[in-house]
Amino acid sequence: MDKCYQCKGEMVPGEVPVRLVVSGRDYRKMVPGLICQNCGEGYVDIAVGEGFEEEIALELAMNGPLTGSAFRLMRKVMGYSSGEVAALFQVDPATISRWEKEKQPINPHVVVLLGSMLLERANNEHTTEDRIRRLLAA
Image (cartoon, rainbow, N blue to C red; front, side, top):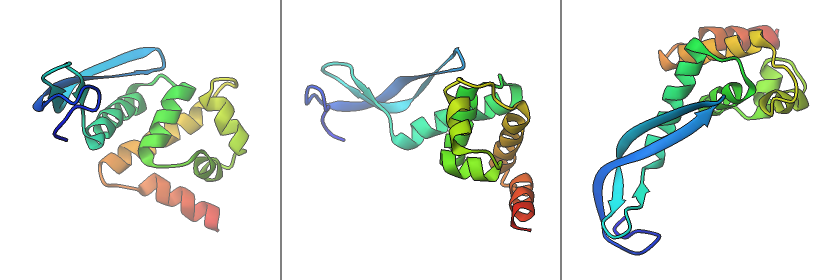
């Protein structure tokens, strides 16, 4: 990108703040991006933003809390639709929606299991995920 989308000013490399609030926790970080010399607007590559989300999802998988919004972020980072994760954990898709919107208490075992799958995937392992899929296929 050569020009700012807001004011058409010149863009220069710099550090851009990113922020995500999950489960009432405020996560902030400075990441490489582009900053408009004219208006100061910052832009980050989508892969950088996704990397920030993955860092947070891994933190939540390790330390919680076991909330619907944490579950949603972990699911999103793993690339699952709500329907896919519902099938994987053999629950109604509406249940996933209620968990993620925190309208129904989330099953803590499912959150822990999804978190374990995410942590394994970060280490290029898929043991738990593969075992669940094999058991469901049997």
